[in-house]
Amino acid sequence: MFTNSCEPTLPKPVYNSNTKHIDTTTLINNTSSSTINSPIQVSTTSTIMTDLNSTTKDNNAMTSKGHETTIDIKQRVPVKSVRVERDYSLGDGITRFQTEYPVELTGKITPEEFSHTITGINKIMDYADRLSWRIVLENILEIVTIYVSPMILSTHHQRTVRRLLTFIEAENSSVYYPHSLSISDPVKAAFLFIEINFYE
Image: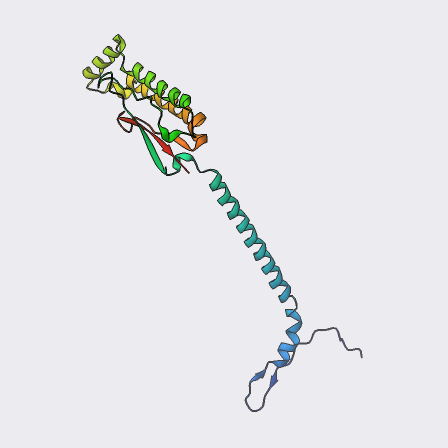
Protein backbone atom coordinates (compact mmCIF):
# COMPACT_ATOMS: atom_id res chain seq x y z
CA MET A 1 0.00 0.00 0.00
CA PHE A 2 2.79 2.33 0.95
CA THR A 3 5.86 2.60 -1.22
CA ASN A 4 9.23 2.91 0.40
CA SER A 5 10.42 6.08 -1.26
CA CYS A 6 13.49 6.34 0.99
CA GLU A 7 15.24 3.35 -0.44
CA PRO A 8 18.11 4.35 -2.70
CA THR A 9 17.67 3.41 -6.29
CA LEU A 10 20.58 2.67 -8.53
CA PRO A 11 20.57 4.39 -11.85
CA LYS A 12 19.54 2.13 -14.64
CA PRO A 13 21.96 1.89 -17.45
CA VAL A 14 20.63 3.38 -20.61
CA TYR A 15 21.38 1.39 -23.72
CA ASN A 16 21.48 2.73 -27.18
CA SER A 17 19.73 0.30 -29.47
CA ASN A 18 22.05 0.97 -32.32
CA THR A 19 25.47 0.81 -30.73
CA LYS A 20 24.61 -1.14 -27.58
CA HIS A 21 26.95 1.07 -25.51
CA ILE A 22 26.16 2.38 -22.06
CA ASP A 23 25.15 6.04 -21.97
CA THR A 24 27.15 7.43 -19.06
CA THR A 25 25.42 10.81 -19.01
CA THR A 26 22.98 9.68 -16.35
CA LEU A 27 25.76 8.22 -14.22
CA ILE A 28 27.77 11.41 -14.39
CA ASN A 29 24.74 13.51 -13.46
CA ASN A 30 23.90 11.23 -10.52
CA THR A 31 27.41 11.17 -9.12
CA SER A 32 28.19 14.82 -9.68
CA SER A 33 27.24 15.61 -6.11
CA SER A 34 30.08 13.44 -4.78
CA THR A 35 32.65 15.73 -6.34
CA ILE A 36 31.63 18.80 -4.38
CA ASN A 37 34.54 18.43 -1.95
CA SER A 38 37.20 18.20 -4.66
CA PRO A 39 37.85 21.97 -5.00
CA ILE A 40 38.13 22.24 -1.19
CA GLN A 41 40.72 19.48 -1.10
CA VAL A 42 42.75 21.09 -3.85
CA SER A 43 42.60 24.44 -2.13
CA THR A 44 43.68 22.92 1.19
CA THR A 45 46.55 21.07 -0.46
CA SER A 46 47.75 24.17 -2.26
CA THR A 47 47.57 26.15 1.00
CA ILE A 48 49.64 23.54 2.82
CA MET A 49 52.23 23.47 0.02
CA THR A 50 52.45 27.28 0.10
CA ASP A 51 53.03 27.23 3.85
CA LEU A 52 55.70 24.54 3.47
CA ASN A 53 57.45 26.50 0.74
CA SER A 54 57.45 29.69 2.78
CA THR A 55 58.74 27.82 5.84
CA THR A 56 61.51 26.24 3.77
CA LYS A 57 62.54 29.63 2.40
CA ASP A 58 62.63 31.09 5.93
CA ASN A 59 64.77 28.20 7.16
CA ASN A 60 67.15 28.57 4.22
CA ALA A 61 67.45 32.30 4.87
CA MET A 62 68.18 31.68 8.56
CA THR A 63 70.76 29.02 7.67
CA SER A 64 72.48 31.32 5.19
CA LYS A 65 72.54 34.12 7.73
CA GLY A 66 73.96 31.74 10.35
CA HIS A 67 76.75 30.69 8.00
CA GLU A 68 77.65 34.29 7.34
CA THR A 69 77.99 35.05 11.04
CA THR A 70 80.08 31.97 11.80
CA ILE A 71 82.80 32.57 9.19
CA ASP A 72 86.09 32.73 11.07
CA ILE A 73 88.95 35.02 10.10
CA LYS A 74 91.17 31.93 9.96
CA GLN A 75 89.17 30.66 6.99
CA ARG A 76 89.49 33.87 4.99
CA VAL A 77 92.08 34.44 2.29
CA PRO A 78 94.52 37.27 3.13
CA VAL A 79 94.80 40.08 0.60
CA LYS A 80 98.46 40.67 1.45
CA SER A 81 101.14 39.74 3.99
CA VAL A 82 104.05 41.47 5.68
CA ARG A 83 107.09 39.47 6.77
CA VAL A 84 108.98 40.08 9.98
CA GLU A 85 112.40 38.71 9.17
CA ARG A 86 114.64 36.79 11.51
CA ASP A 87 117.34 38.68 13.39
CA TYR A 88 120.79 37.14 12.81
CA SER A 89 122.72 39.80 14.72
CA LEU A 90 123.35 37.40 17.63
CA GLY A 91 124.27 34.44 15.40
CA ASP A 92 122.55 31.77 13.37
CA GLY A 93 121.97 29.46 16.34
CA ILE A 94 119.75 31.94 18.23
CA THR A 95 116.16 32.32 17.11
CA ARG A 96 115.05 35.94 17.29
CA PHE A 97 112.97 38.25 15.11
CA GLN A 98 113.40 41.89 14.19
CA THR A 99 111.47 44.40 16.29
CA GLU A 100 111.41 47.17 13.67
CA TYR A 101 107.86 48.43 13.15
CA PRO A 102 106.58 47.77 9.58
CA VAL A 103 105.10 50.86 7.94
CA GLU A 104 102.30 48.70 6.47
CA LEU A 105 100.84 48.38 9.97
CA THR A 106 100.34 52.14 10.30
CA GLY A 107 96.72 52.84 11.19
CA LYS A 108 96.13 49.22 12.17
CA ILE A 109 98.04 48.65 15.41
CA THR A 110 100.45 50.85 17.36
CA PRO A 111 104.23 50.33 17.44
CA GLU A 112 103.93 49.48 21.13
CA GLU A 113 101.50 46.64 20.42
CA PHE A 114 103.75 45.28 17.67
CA SER A 115 106.82 45.54 19.90
CA HIS A 116 105.01 43.71 22.72
CA THR A 117 104.18 40.84 20.36
CA ILE A 118 107.66 40.41 18.87
CA THR A 119 109.38 40.87 22.24
CA GLY A 120 107.17 38.19 23.76
CA ILE A 121 107.96 35.79 20.91
CA ASN A 122 111.70 36.47 21.27
CA LYS A 123 111.59 35.79 25.02
CA ILE A 124 109.89 32.45 24.45
CA MET A 125 112.46 31.52 21.79
CA ASP A 126 115.29 32.50 24.17
CA TYR A 127 113.80 30.09 26.67
CA ALA A 128 113.71 27.38 23.99
CA ASP A 129 117.40 27.87 23.15
CA ARG A 130 118.69 27.83 26.70
CA LEU A 131 120.79 24.90 27.92
CA SER A 132 120.27 23.03 31.19
CA TRP A 133 120.97 19.59 32.67
CA ARG A 134 117.37 18.57 32.11
CA ILE A 135 117.62 19.36 28.41
CA VAL A 136 120.90 17.42 28.20
CA LEU A 137 119.28 14.39 29.84
CA GLU A 138 116.32 14.62 27.48
CA ASN A 139 118.67 14.61 24.50
CA ILE A 140 120.56 11.59 25.83
CA LEU A 141 117.27 9.77 26.42
CA GLU A 142 116.22 10.47 22.83
CA ILE A 143 119.45 8.95 21.50
CA VAL A 144 119.29 5.88 23.77
CA THR A 145 115.65 5.17 22.87
CA ILE A 146 116.29 5.81 19.16
CA TYR A 147 114.03 8.88 19.34
CA VAL A 148 111.06 6.96 20.70
CA SER A 149 110.91 8.87 24.00
CA PRO A 150 109.47 12.08 22.46
CA MET A 151 106.42 10.06 21.45
CA ILE A 152 105.78 9.27 25.11
CA LEU A 153 107.32 12.19 27.00
CA SER A 154 107.16 15.77 25.74
CA THR A 155 110.54 17.43 25.25
CA HIS A 156 111.65 20.91 26.22
CA HIS A 157 111.32 22.06 22.62
CA GLN A 158 107.78 20.66 22.26
CA ARG A 159 106.65 22.35 25.46
CA THR A 160 108.13 25.65 24.32
CA VAL A 161 106.42 25.45 20.93
CA ARG A 162 103.05 24.87 22.63
CA ARG A 163 103.71 27.89 24.83
CA LEU A 164 104.60 29.96 21.76
CA LEU A 165 101.43 28.99 19.89
CA THR A 166 99.31 29.82 22.95
CA PHE A 167 100.93 33.27 23.16
CA ILE A 168 100.38 33.96 19.44
CA GLU A 169 96.74 32.91 19.63
CA ALA A 170 96.20 35.22 22.62
CA GLU A 171 97.81 38.12 20.74
CA ASN A 172 95.68 37.43 17.67
CA SER A 173 92.45 37.36 19.68
CA SER A 174 93.15 40.51 21.68
CA VAL A 175 95.06 42.72 19.20
CA TYR A 176 95.19 41.48 15.62
CA TYR A 177 91.82 39.86 14.84
CA PRO A 178 89.82 43.00 15.77
CA HIS A 179 91.86 44.93 13.16
CA SER A 180 91.47 42.27 10.42
CA LEU A 181 95.03 41.05 10.93
CA SER A 182 96.60 37.79 12.05
CA ILE A 183 100.05 36.47 12.95
CA SER A 184 101.01 33.24 11.23
CA ASP A 185 102.63 30.28 12.93
CA PRO A 186 106.44 30.67 12.65
CA VAL A 187 106.86 26.91 13.06
CA LYS A 188 105.43 26.42 9.55
CA ALA A 189 108.16 28.71 8.19
CA ALA A 190 110.89 26.89 10.14
CA PHE A 191 111.35 30.04 12.28
CA LEU A 192 112.80 31.93 9.30
CA PHE A 193 110.19 34.71 9.46
CA ILE A 194 106.82 35.71 10.87
CA GLU A 195 103.98 36.68 8.56
CA ILE A 196 101.34 39.25 9.46
CA ASN A 197 98.32 38.74 7.22
CA PHE A 198 95.88 41.44 6.13
CA TYR A 199 92.17 40.72 5.51
CA GLU A 200 89.35 42.76 4.03
